[in-house]
Image 1 (cartoon, rainbow, N blue to C red):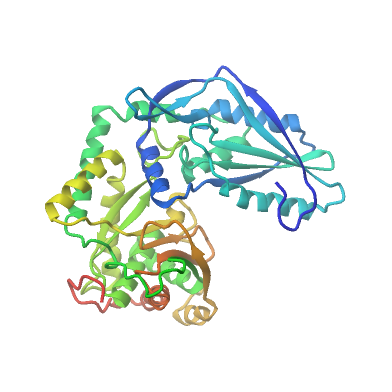
Image 2: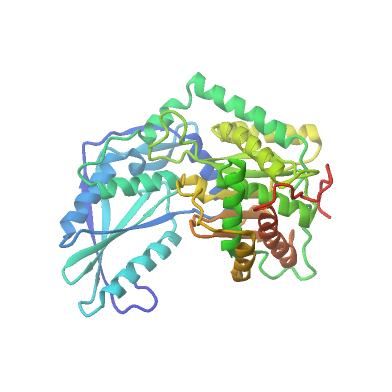
Length: 468
């Protein structure tokens, strides 16, 4: 596992045996079905990297013990895909076996800062290595050693068995080694979802999806148009950061009594309406589902897409915020469902409508997924003038081509508490660079205009619809 800029790193591997854990074979959970479908559509496994600094004087035996403890503690970390007699995907959870621990030893003459940098770069690069879900355990772990002691644990966790919330819970258990409290298990979720009460939740969610999907156009941003020379990379990525927009959305959130995530979603919807003429906007959003009984602290993938529609026409920004709040609340309550039900619904609607249609815009707010508690904090003496001045420091960075995207626009609101960071992957056949830049900068403009003025309007006529 040599990385660029580092000299030789000794690489060994030991087997860590475990036994006496719960085992079983169950159907895939709804969350597993959902993320597996996203992986198939995009070609991306979305694996998650992590790192933990070890206590001073830690040994390889200490790292082994932590790995064994976390694997035995959670059924998700011992799950692999299998196929039953009818050809259906299932998951098998092993009660005993062995997992590998990589031993990465840096030269004694390396500086501590270089050791830390190596661990960080490994955490970032290792998730690019793919899992074989039928053969591999969903957790890979390494201990980085220097001058005879363990410095860091670095790992990769498969998104198939854990979402971002579960990843944070696993980190908590690694930190609390030896004192972690029991948690619900992936197998518990798999066994509960066939219950009639859970099936009723899925049915209710389908009624919500049907109301949103029935009137939509074939694609959110119109039919993609290939360029005259389609040989270049089709998908691209960009990041826009703005302290000014962050402070402005905080001001709107405080005035309207609305959480920061929904304010930001409203601002983006207004920006899309102003720049591209899209109204109403129907988007997919990610909901963590951990507010549901039994799912708060389970190591399992329970986040799923929901869908919502925002009308930005003939309204003030504050009114759009209120509309977004209501739409997002309904979407959040209808985000726990069997993806097989959604596939059947979409096929039926396509047949009834006479053409296939898909929501091809996704907005994922990482801040909401990790349930930040500092979102309403706002520095003292923030004024419209200071925010306008700060907008001069906003940055737009083109990040080059990107592969394997299955939507026209996938916008990630990154988990930053100090500024608004919008990371967008988009289809160049559907949106030009000029349009993308206009949308991102207009989001900042909308926020700044409305930060201290509740009368600011979207400037969009009711029922515009479509892409110009």
